Image (cartoon, rainbow, N blue to C red; front, side):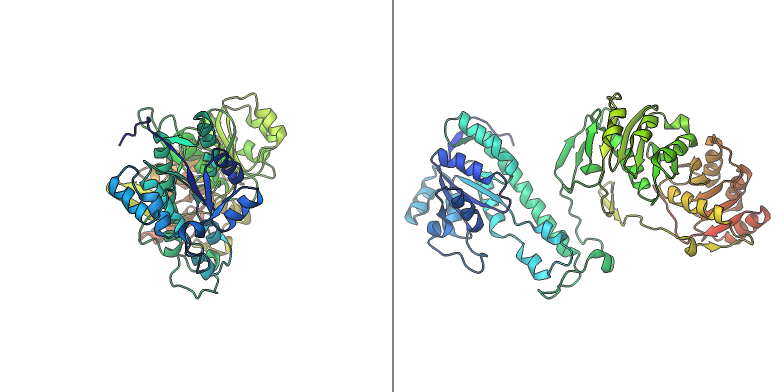
Length: 533
């Protein structure tokens, strides 16, 4: 549907009822300056009066008092009739006239902060339910449906532009194009609001008593997957193109300001689709480690990953893993980047870097690399993974599986040494983030070779060895899934590995364990696998 821009409509009466009072007084002042009658409710009316504005209470308009602790105040024919009647329609005009219903030409509403309430630790169930807005969404929908005659304003960020448009028109009036834009935003707002409520309530198995707190997720059993998958995220950024120039693309964000979608870009060219995908891959892998870690990614696979005492040491080790592949890569770091690390990283051509912070001195070192994208990221909670298939979507829990040294099962006659064990844990964490079939060779907190995305596990073992530029002798190897036959293990041993970590669970486990004993390999089973497609 296209909307013409020619018709403007005057605003004589506005109803204001907002939770977020940012910019409210300035906007209401502008309306009042154009002679608009202001009607309001509760705390909004109080804020306007304190600012010296003349305001009519909603009860004066409806002739009915607010009641039931504010649950009923705008749910009234004199509100919705004033919003919904079609101006110029003879029957509508006669109906509202006979009932004394006055036109309402603008509604300024934002809704109860349900999501903020739901996010409060230990929030009482009854308090959560009370923060489900009823009157607000009803007014938003009524006004948006009748956008031909009514302007619906749901975002404080729109106030300055609306003030400017009204001043340009020398009076309180808005174009049809503006009213249409506001109506579309309004319906998106109510859709997102209803989705947030439905998703929150869907995660609560049984309704607690009103005074009982909703147990934090960390203290309760994992919630069931949703009975209905609701995804409602606003457009955050239009991208130049997708994976390839002939594909359109955009970034949508949950609005939390967390993770890669909510990151702050400090410098550099516009982020591309592929930049964002790679940044997410290296950032998520960097979060696997408690010590300083640097991950260099190419096409979502780590070509270099390392830990160290400092970011600089970790970076130097990661780069040494595969300096050829690192050229033009994307880097994820789990610590603030200081000047010393920045000076070294700046020597390499890098597309983008994600870190929790860049010191002012580090930013100075990077400033000369004008195309380099620096992105500050705040960690986001792990959420279910959604993938598209023709005709639908797949959803699964995030892969949060981790193992400790105590949970490993030694299956060979020779147990791994303490040094091998540390390297095995490191290799296993990296392997989790490598495309299947995956083999990772590592030593002393540093990847040495990575075999990613191969159709055969033997090929993955051989390819990872072929890619290695550092000596493979004395490394350990991680396999994201079990070795189905001894041949993959034999390839790992031939490359120079002395210890192996793998899930186990193959019908040929006994044969594989026997091969490990014959080759003097220490081998441990994790009991979990990390397929990554």
